[in-house]
Image (cartoon, rainbow, N blue to C red; front, top):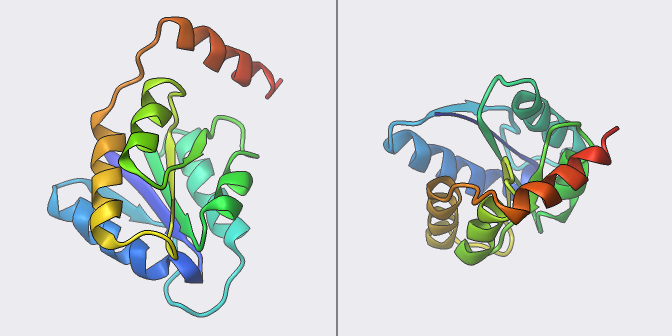
Length: 145
Protein backbone atom coordinates (compact mmCIF):
# COMPACT_ATOMS: atom_id res chain seq x y z
CA UNK A 1 0.00 0.00 0.00
CA UNK A 2 1.24 3.48 -0.90
CA UNK A 3 0.31 6.37 1.37
CA UNK A 4 0.95 10.09 0.88
CA UNK A 5 1.43 12.08 4.07
CA UNK A 6 1.59 15.81 4.68
CA UNK A 7 1.33 18.42 7.36
CA UNK A 8 1.83 22.04 8.17
CA UNK A 9 4.14 23.23 10.95
CA UNK A 10 1.62 22.42 13.71
CA UNK A 11 1.30 18.83 12.54
CA UNK A 12 4.95 18.29 11.65
CA UNK A 13 6.04 16.36 14.75
CA UNK A 14 3.03 14.03 14.62
CA UNK A 15 3.55 13.57 10.87
CA UNK A 16 7.13 12.47 11.43
CA UNK A 17 6.01 10.01 14.11
CA UNK A 18 3.22 8.55 11.95
CA UNK A 19 5.49 8.37 8.90
CA UNK A 20 8.06 6.33 10.83
CA UNK A 21 5.31 4.17 12.33
CA UNK A 22 3.93 3.35 8.88
CA UNK A 23 7.40 2.59 7.51
CA UNK A 24 8.06 0.25 10.45
CA UNK A 25 4.98 -1.71 9.31
CA UNK A 26 6.47 -2.07 5.83
CA UNK A 27 4.24 0.48 4.10
CA UNK A 28 5.48 2.83 1.39
CA UNK A 29 5.11 6.45 2.45
CA UNK A 30 5.46 9.49 0.20
CA UNK A 31 6.19 12.55 2.33
CA UNK A 32 4.74 15.66 0.69
CA UNK A 33 6.05 17.99 3.43
CA UNK A 34 6.46 20.16 5.36
CA UNK A 35 10.01 19.62 6.53
CA UNK A 36 10.10 21.56 9.81
CA UNK A 37 8.12 23.42 12.44
CA UNK A 38 8.66 26.71 10.59
CA UNK A 39 5.32 28.35 9.79
CA UNK A 40 3.81 27.35 6.42
CA UNK A 41 0.41 27.48 4.75
CA UNK A 42 -1.54 24.23 5.20
CA UNK A 43 -3.51 24.39 1.90
CA UNK A 44 -0.29 23.79 -0.07
CA UNK A 45 0.23 20.40 1.60
CA UNK A 46 -3.44 19.45 1.62
CA UNK A 47 -3.52 19.94 -2.14
CA UNK A 48 -0.40 17.83 -2.75
CA UNK A 49 -1.70 14.86 -0.76
CA UNK A 50 -5.26 15.13 -2.08
CA UNK A 51 -4.01 15.23 -5.68
CA UNK A 52 -1.79 12.19 -5.03
CA UNK A 53 -4.90 10.29 -3.90
CA UNK A 54 -7.17 11.68 -6.60
CA UNK A 55 -4.81 10.85 -9.48
CA UNK A 56 -4.04 7.34 -8.17
CA UNK A 57 -0.39 7.93 -7.29
CA UNK A 58 -1.27 6.50 -3.85
CA UNK A 59 -4.19 4.57 -2.41
CA UNK A 60 -4.62 6.74 0.69
CA UNK A 61 -3.49 9.97 2.26
CA UNK A 62 -2.88 11.28 5.75
CA UNK A 63 -2.89 14.96 6.64
CA UNK A 64 -2.19 16.82 9.88
CA UNK A 65 -2.42 20.40 11.04
CA UNK A 66 -3.05 21.83 14.50
CA UNK A 67 -6.73 20.90 14.69
CA UNK A 68 -7.18 19.02 11.43
CA UNK A 69 -9.95 21.38 10.41
CA UNK A 70 -8.08 23.42 7.82
CA UNK A 71 -6.57 20.35 6.18
CA UNK A 72 -10.00 18.70 5.97
CA UNK A 73 -11.58 21.71 4.32
CA UNK A 74 -8.73 22.20 1.85
CA UNK A 75 -8.33 18.53 0.86
CA UNK A 76 -12.04 18.11 0.23
CA UNK A 77 -11.89 20.77 -2.50
CA UNK A 78 -9.97 18.33 -4.73
CA UNK A 79 -12.20 16.11 -6.88
CA UNK A 80 -11.88 12.49 -5.78
CA UNK A 81 -10.47 13.34 -2.35
CA UNK A 82 -12.65 12.34 0.60
CA UNK A 83 -10.90 13.59 3.72
CA UNK A 84 -12.24 12.82 7.18
CA UNK A 85 -11.07 14.45 10.39
CA UNK A 86 -10.69 11.65 12.91
CA UNK A 87 -9.68 12.42 16.48
CA UNK A 88 -10.33 8.88 17.72
CA UNK A 89 -10.18 5.36 16.33
CA UNK A 90 -13.99 5.13 16.34
CA UNK A 91 -14.21 8.13 14.03
CA UNK A 92 -11.65 6.48 11.71
CA UNK A 93 -13.68 3.28 11.71
CA UNK A 94 -16.85 5.00 10.56
CA UNK A 95 -15.01 7.29 8.13
CA UNK A 96 -14.03 4.14 6.24
CA UNK A 97 -17.00 1.88 7.04
CA UNK A 98 -19.78 4.32 6.13
CA UNK A 99 -18.11 7.14 4.17
CA UNK A 100 -15.33 5.36 2.24
CA UNK A 101 -12.88 8.14 3.16
CA UNK A 102 -9.54 7.95 1.37
CA UNK A 103 -7.71 10.61 3.40
CA UNK A 104 -7.30 10.46 7.17
CA UNK A 105 -6.92 13.87 8.82
CA UNK A 106 -5.59 14.17 12.37
CA UNK A 107 -4.88 17.00 14.81
CA UNK A 108 -1.24 17.58 15.72
CA UNK A 109 -2.11 19.76 18.69
CA UNK A 110 -4.87 17.52 20.05
CA UNK A 111 -3.54 13.97 19.61
CA UNK A 112 -0.56 12.15 21.03
CA UNK A 113 1.48 9.51 19.23
CA UNK A 114 -0.28 6.48 20.74
CA UNK A 115 -3.75 7.77 19.90
CA UNK A 116 -2.56 8.63 16.38
CA UNK A 117 -1.18 5.11 15.88
CA UNK A 118 -4.46 3.55 17.03
CA UNK A 119 -6.42 5.87 14.74
CA UNK A 120 -4.19 5.07 11.76
CA UNK A 121 -4.43 1.32 12.42
CA UNK A 122 -8.22 1.50 12.61
CA UNK A 123 -8.49 3.58 9.43
CA UNK A 124 -6.39 1.14 7.41
CA UNK A 125 -7.92 -2.02 8.85
CA UNK A 126 -11.51 -0.99 8.13
CA UNK A 127 -13.14 -1.58 4.75
CA UNK A 128 -16.08 0.25 3.26
CA UNK A 129 -19.27 -1.66 4.11
CA UNK A 130 -21.13 -0.74 0.92
CA UNK A 131 -24.86 -1.42 1.04
CA UNK A 132 -26.98 1.63 1.72
CA UNK A 133 -23.79 3.64 2.21
CA UNK A 134 -22.86 3.18 -1.45
CA UNK A 135 -25.88 5.24 -2.46
CA UNK A 136 -25.03 7.97 0.05
CA UNK A 137 -21.38 8.15 -0.99
CA UNK A 138 -22.58 8.30 -4.60
CA UNK A 139 -24.77 11.26 -3.74
CA UNK A 140 -21.72 13.05 -2.33
CA UNK A 141 -19.71 12.26 -5.46
CA UNK A 142 -22.46 13.86 -7.56
CA UNK A 143 -21.62 17.18 -5.87
CA UNK A 144 -18.34 17.14 -7.80
CA UNK A 145 -20.21 17.36 -11.08
